[in-house]
Amino acid sequence: MPTLRDRKRERTRRALVEAATDLFEQRGYERTTVADIAAAADIGTRTFFSYFGSKEEVLFPEADDRVRAAVAAIEARGPGDRPMDTLLSALAEVNQGGDEMVGRLAALRVRLTQTVPAVRGRALQVQLDAQREIARHLHAAYPRELDEVAAGALVGAFVGAVTGALQVLLDDPDALPADSDELGDRLRTATEIALRPWRSV
Amino acid sequence: MPTLRDRKRERTRRALVEAATDLFEQRGYERTTVADIAAAADIGTRTFFSYFGSKEEVLFPEADDRVRAAVAAIEARGPGDRPMDTLLSALAEVNQGGDEMVGRLAALRVRLTQTVPAVRGRALQVQLDAQREIARHLHAAYPRELDEVAAGALVGAFVGAVTGALQVLLDDPDALPADSDELGDRLRTATEIALRPWRSV
DNA sequence: GTGCAGAGTTGCAACGAGTGCAGAACTGCA
DNA sequence: TGCAGTTCTGCACTCGTTGCAACTCTGCAC
Image 1 (cartoon, each protein chain N blue to C red):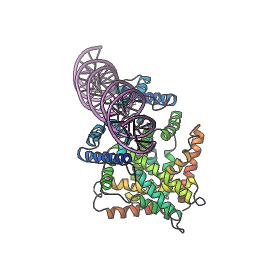
Image 2 (image 1 turned 60 degrees about the vertical axis):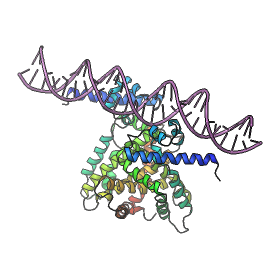
Image 3 (image 1 turned 90 degrees about the horizontal axis):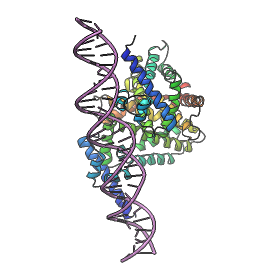
Image 4 (image 1 turned 45 degrees about the horizontal axis):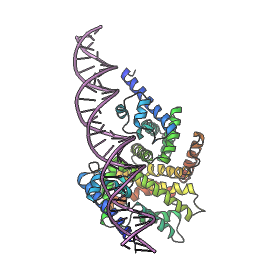
């Protein structure tokens, strides 16, 4: 069982994410200060930064979990799967799972990514880091078919295609993600279109 | 002929970029303040921000030119070119041109992108904006073959492939600066593999 | 249960990026 | 030469972020 210390830490972390989510939704990102978030979670401002390295990071608390899930999907590939099949299921895994907090966060993130440059920058960095990690494992899974660079290119092409499609689908400022169902729809549409060329192989 | 005001403004802008480049090279990015840059260019600190919106932006002064060049390449496509051909020449155009200052800046940018998160974030944003613009024009050039979303996906796949491969190539300090021909070769090979399904587009 | 070492928390002071404002300096043009 | 519009600049302020030193709490041994 995790120690009291760990449980407490986890609880505080969650409290920070929830407080931040609430405040960002109410007042917006820019009009919420780190001090506000810390106060709402009943924590010293200074302490915020021992949980998250920056204000933006509080928006991506499950990034590591997602990457881990994708990596696990690669490890668990079927014996006959080609690299593309494996990559497909890994990326399906990334967009999976999570409770309602994760859903709220995801919707908020999409909106902020479209409107706040700092958040967009962080989102792209998180994405790029995830890509590299996935590429590493994809290469490990198919050492003969894909050298490291080719794996990087493949994952990049894949993620880039989806991102590029999604960007067009979201850049209409009117219909941002009112409800997360429509958000999911657009994500699916983007993936569908982006991956068409690979599917037909 | 451009007015005195314009010439002066252009000169100041260039002075800022040069001062920043020098200082970043000497002391590093983090240890250089905006006040340092402004002082080196003999300008008030406040005025820096009427030329560049942020400290990072001074590293991407020619971004607009590059995009314009790519767009021009799309407009100037040959009559028989398929979307993929046009995109290839447009992106070749992006990595073209510029004097030595541009070269120095580009090298500095590569280094800082690998080491300073804020710079990486900005670089990715610049790239994404460029992608969207190029996708827009590619769609305009091939309204029947490519809908807007598919154009976004195509451009994204391409840029993503190159970025993904480059990321792997650059994060290993061994195989980096040997010669830029071999780097180009490996890039081409990797993107070739990743984009095979798109080739017929 | 007591006490101690190490981990975690906190306020404080400081630095740098970025912004609004109001006045000074400059340019284009008559 | 003078005026109108633009640009430049210092000032004061907000906010994110960090180093530091004191303080509190938890895990653990005795």
